[in-house]
Image (cartoon, rainbow, N blue to C red; front, side, top):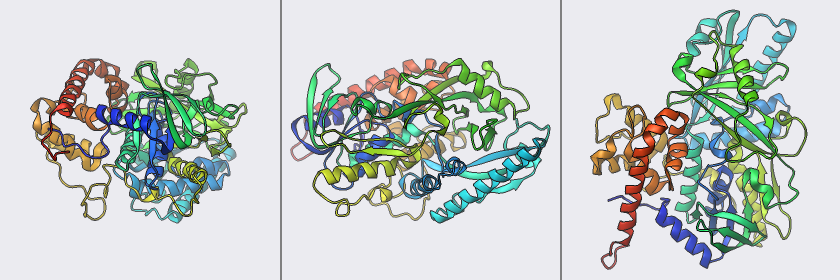
Length: 547
């Protein structure tokens, strides 16, 4: 029997949340289940407000599931001279890495290679780049993020650079500069953790519930059956990302497409650092080869205006593929080609403002508080989602007739589920992780290590599911690196309602199309059985006094 806990999202919690929102007015109703919407729900709930959240599809099914997985300190903003935004990024990165989600957001080495040639301009750009990196480290120290978490930058020679990035071009390589920044294990998992933590604090989270129309206090939704319902709140917050202008006509929103190509890390010599490659003619702009813990590497990203693109499936144009391969190959010994690409993905950033150049558009966020309309929060970046949420909820609190000073945000100090301190009764110091005993075969502890990275303290709950059913101890298909117990946990605690939810967002198996195809049948079977068993358990007569 599954050990259900507050914060679990599943079919039963969805039904209960939808029923509650239908029958009760809440203080704050959030439209959108991406990083910003989940952050708003958590911020509001931890201030003691009653909260609802509606998401048209699955959590992180839009832009928030298709980022570069970086939680960065604003180095690119320094290159543009936006010191305030760089500082904001550094401050929010510190909160994520030390308190909010240290099991999901950890340090990553970045390598900026240096090649001979380029003349005076090349040497000047190298000097400016190093100055920016060292200034970013000053911001790191100012934010009180210890160098034990993000080490200080340092120069390295050509041999050390090739050890970090074995496919780096040897010809003309003089060495490089290594700096450290934050990276999230999986952006979709961070969104799910935020939404679940909001639910743990009382938020009513409903996925598969599309907002159709909204006013300052009312939201009409399609509840997933084709029926329309009216949900009421004292304040509505529009956090719909690239769809925000549907509830805020005239909003100056510019969708920008960020494309990534996916490779097997072995094709790149299994790099140990993120490799940067400069975009010629655009100082401070790079493409990145980003190695992941799942054996894949992402090459990204583009920054192109994409008016009218589908926010769920914006597509990957041929010119994006050509651009990424051309820029990366200029710094590689052995060129990548299209046959090396396993898959690709793209997300649309909701940039505030217009203009012809997406790359130079502002990354600042906007909170639009127009009387008679929902409060709209949009723009920004994944790193600063919490600050965006705080600003939006401050506006909502003011609408409720209170002062944000009397009901201040506490989200900077709230760890998400799975993080140290998020378990009741937790008293261990620091970020030490207890040993995880996987009930099935686990040579070299690979499964246990992966579960701790992705689930933190909740890895023991996944292991408990596997212990109760030996069939769930095995991979869903050979080489998947995902067990049946994780699929069951996705359905019982993480709100997954379909195989696509599992393959595309909870596990990322969809990035390996051949594995995803082989896993689709087993995942569908495990998901159906788990949901059926959970429904039967919900219908089981309870002894008097049992909750």
